[in-house]
Length: 321
Picture 1 (cartoon, rainbow, N blue to C red):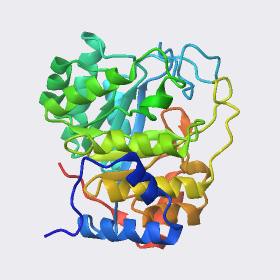
Picture 2 (cartoon, rainbow, N blue to C red; picture 1 turned 90 degrees about the horizontal axis):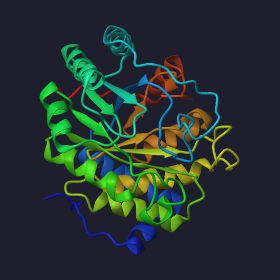
Picture 3 (spheres, helix red, strand yellow; picture 1 turned 60 degrees about the vertical axis):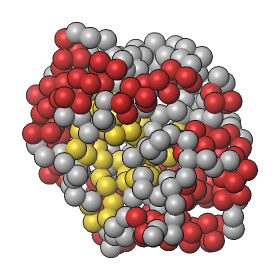
Picture 4 (tube, rainbow, N blue to C red; picture 1 turned 45 degrees about the vertical axis):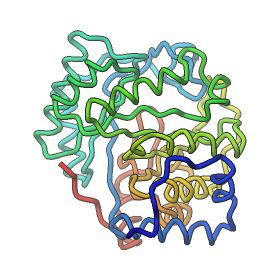
């Protein structure tokens, strides 16, 4: 019998109590859970490619791809399938085992562009990589078609708590995000869902966000924890960067609450030193984005990550496909 039962009924007060544990106690508990449910020395390496950049009609306050803001991001047409598959091959040669494709859409629309995405998924799968997409809102039929193409995972973050959400995004309701997650789950696709910290939310907002995730049945298979990367031209450009210990606390709490999930150390890693990143891995993160770019924000280069993993005695998690 496992010492860590999977729960879906955590209260915000219970989550806050875990989050606020003395740091070393929190990290120890999270590491203990991690070792019970996951290979102790393996990390999933995921490469993320923007296959269609910019001109998004959403007004997410953190996003340089929004058409509402004047940022450094210039709109680009969708990348041809062959170029995407070339990028996937290079990612695999560098050690990645999951390849994620993102399009700056509010929602998926049926037609040639969605058909191209389906071809990308088929091609990525043919390379022996796990395939992931993040395309905005999906209907049930679109989710089914992605699954038939071989899609393993769909990313659709809730971003923040239900209460704080309206301060960050007004062009899409929180419930619409949940509807897409429902369609993904019912199609038999794994769910990748997390959020962003450092957007002016309270600690309780962070705990409420985690509660939204743990009330899903089952829990998301992948939980990205992002730190805001302030971008000039967006409403959150002047937000102060979070302290790395805040990120460690969120990762450790997520690991304890969702023992089976891959917890991903995501955006904002560029600003962390090696020691902070290793502390995040010790706190239960067992997935990272691998490659110099996360859609439109910088990420440590592959040589940095290869040395980081080697120095920590870690190796890539083999693909599940």
